[in-house]
Image 1: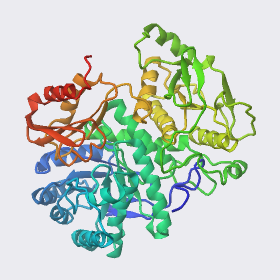
Image 2: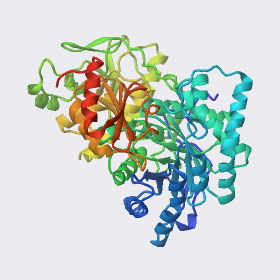
Image 3: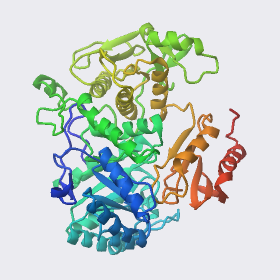
Image 4: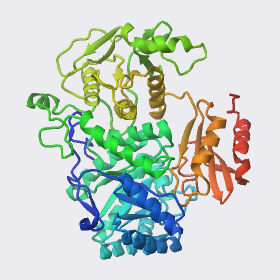
Length: 606
């Protein structure tokens, strides 16, 4: 195992990867990896047998800027219809590469490979059916399982090699095979091992035109497993440098979906990891592409490159040699492969509020925002401002310079300006405090400057989520200050939504919602709105809304309750991963979900 997942936690350098070709580059095909720009992709949501609608939605995505379009192929018949979809698109002059999304059906993958440029397979269910079985495997039994995998997967590998197709090994947290679950658990390590099993088969058959994705609905898991994957690939050798597809699955919609995606995808992009991305929103698919564009565009503004060239367009600014020498050899301030909150000293933050130690991460606002927000506060407010920035006993530090601290009960932050962007600066501050043996609590800021003209709110949201979410996922931060969005109400809501998405606080219901596809058995956007209207006041409760069994019990991971499409017009309800009610008419399902929450003792009246 390499001891690092990137060359430096402070200086940007894009991870070197081999190029994977999808389609004909002379006809709008794409090359993923190497020094190529990060590729944007999305997925259509209609029935794959509806050729005309598939063509219409694909053209709409391409017009929005998608460079790859994914289409589900749940059956051999659906996979065969990809021939007509592709032919219809080509007849209209659209040569965007198409990706077939395969679960459970190797035969469908083999059929789809005849017609589209790329096949996505899920290693958790391509050759295995999920039974949640508990079993101890001997070495011989495990080897026999791997031989069975080779037998199932090799035909697709050989066909793709023959036809010049690409493959994505798309591992999903929560849909790992029983074999992986029993040996490695439902863990980032298990996700990595699942991908490497299939990667090893592809390599043994001389196939290298593949890339890897590890997706979860929890941004922390997304970050941890990709760091672990990159380190593992580097340790296996320089020819294991396969490109990586990034995404946070079941992120949901609106501000929450964008924040979760920004934390998981943006943090990794800022560390040089990622060659293609999909932002999975429970919204119309074309709305995902501008978020992809904005996320990619944030990276140069949030990073500082080493002088050996960043290989990102547009490139981040380059660190002066003296600063690069200062940062050389300084490690991450915490274990990058396992989340643990940084140890800090508890201190008073305001009259009745403490931070640090075992306290939750606090929300600080500027005085101008406090003056607007304070009149609306009540004793029952659980998402209000907790301290005024200008009133804090705060030590502002330049972490690139020498500094002295003589006590641990002093709140510290990075001073504005300086030579480092926010993520690198706060990581360096935490590392230097650790080197001094200091446990001062840290106030995080989403930006270290005060722009003369505020950014558009959509960009301010993404910047704050990437910066603060990345640091919180590193275990750094005892309080946060969002100042990129000067609007008091919106900025306060953004602060709490970032803390909830990063798993630091729970002030409202948490939703895990799949983004819809051709397998979905109900209108996800409408159902999500109905469920939220009844349940969004349930603080500390997590509800999964899944359109089909593929994104069902496994993908729900740690949700308390699940609302899952079981058949057309029918819904199955879950408590955790256990199904408890089946085939409920859709018109009754939300009421029955509320009844289930009541019976479980987690219901509160609004």
